[in-house]
Image 1 (cartoon, rainbow, N blue to C red):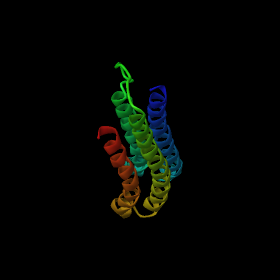
Image 2 (cartoon, rainbow, N blue to C red; image 1 turned 120 degrees about the vertical axis):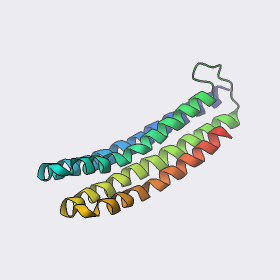
Image 3 (tube, rainbow, N blue to C red; image 1 turned 90 degrees about the vertical axis):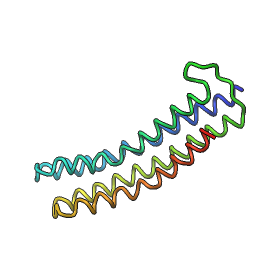
Amino acid sequence: MENAILMAVLGAGLSIGLAGGGSSIGIGTAGAKGAGVFGEKPALFGKILLMMLLPGSQGIYGLLIAILILNSAGLLGGEPSITALEGAKYLGAGVAMGVSGLFSGWFQGRVAASGIGAMARDESLTGRLIIQAVVVETYAIFGLLVALLLVLL
């Protein structure tokens, strides 16, 4: 049982740690580009902020899965008692969410940063640039779906 609990804790940590890291990288990348553009075109602040925040969703997904893992394993105020198979499911869920969140957040930030640069040149492209950045998030959503299935079934 101790190994099962260890796997659940590792799954929760990987979920939020990796997905949150991807969000941080993505937001930082887009934010750095946005700061430069904002200095030149302050009227674009709202649109820049939206693009900058897009990679933040992966960290939210990672947090959700981490909380679900900890709760399902009985580690949030309950009496932890899980099998090795359940511990492995929780570890798999954390890895699925964490890795998909890491890379999609990271690369969504790069797409968002490029979009911010393009927006500075032609503000009419904003909607299409947002769509481009959102497409990258599809893979974080796939990771979230697999993680939810592992934790809840």
